[in-house]
Length: 166
Image (cartoon, rainbow, N blue to C red; front, side, top):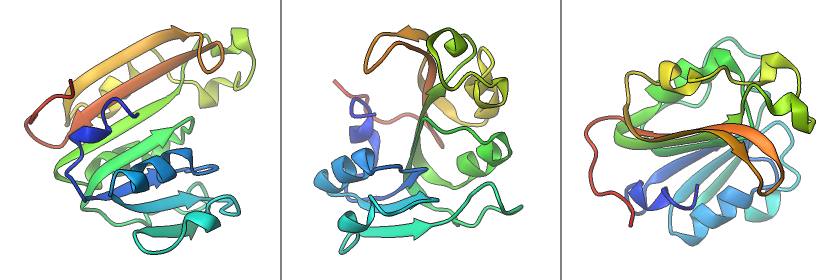
């Protein structure tokens, strides 16, 4: 995530979806972004709430419609997969907005949780799910850090690619 955060429009609005303890939210705030951090349990996020950071408690899997609007200059999703939301996530980007998405993929069951196929991406699934976006980077396979896992990552933009990170 850190490698590509500089692609997001400086000072832009960023959605941290399934923000968990707020690791990415805190980093994005430090970079000067305005962040909406969403999770079903926001206790760990509350200390980050304030100027520049809106914390929203919601179970994204409970509703049928996308409740978060659009026009985001960046959307960050890590370690979370709810397939019915994938098209809405891509559509919520502003023109030129950047999606940074990383989660577990098939094969991760060898390393522990998650092991349920409902929560593991199929090979190339993020490429297919975000085919309407311009792909900047895509990776899939085994990683050793922060712990052994099989993951899939995509960085894509709603429109043409601007400058790439160095």
